[in-house]
Amino acid sequence: HTGPATPIWFDRTSKLALKTELWQNKNEDITGVMLYVCEGIETSIVLNGKIMSSFSFDAGNFAHMTVNPQGPECTCGNQGCWELFSGFQYFLEDYPDKSPDEKVYDTFLRFKDDCLNKKDTALHFLDRYIYWFTMGLENIIAGLYLPEILIGGYASELWELMAEKVTASLNIRFKQYDPWHRKVRAIDHDVQTILDGAALLAMSYVIHVDLYRELFVDSYQELQHITKAEN
Image (cartoon, rainbow, N blue to C red):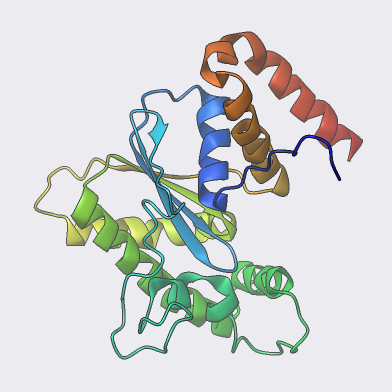
């Protein structure tokens, strides 16, 4: 190929989801952290509507902080990383009846259904998951003290089952901050959220997207509605 090079932009999933959230809800002044959980876990920080970035793409990512010093070795070389206990690829490795070729999301859906059907094994796994998930979240809150926590990815699909116990644990851990005022909420989880974020990432390098938000947001949401209806 001898023509002009085609530019390629990429970023972490948590940032793409955060871009979509900021765009759709016009949250220009939001300050908080996004926890995006799928096979692994990622976090990204937003300050006054601006997503923290760095040359390594890893700014604001706490996936590899240690939550269990006696835990297994992570691919990063660390011991007991949060990702090993809160990313579903690792957490569901020993879930009952999991076949070697079963996809992570398929195992997750079985786990979710079992939780909704109140199966004892699944509820035991859920309690264990909440313990490790909340431990990492507490570390982030203690270190950053940000006012808003966004939950995305697979964890958002479980949030109704997790919210009460996670919130209770946070209230106990941070009872000295009275009242505990952080807003913790789940965002929609679907592939479209990430695709929209990827489109916004590319657009941000070509035009000043924020300048056109008010003009385009209604058309953007209508296009989303049409796309989902066609699928």
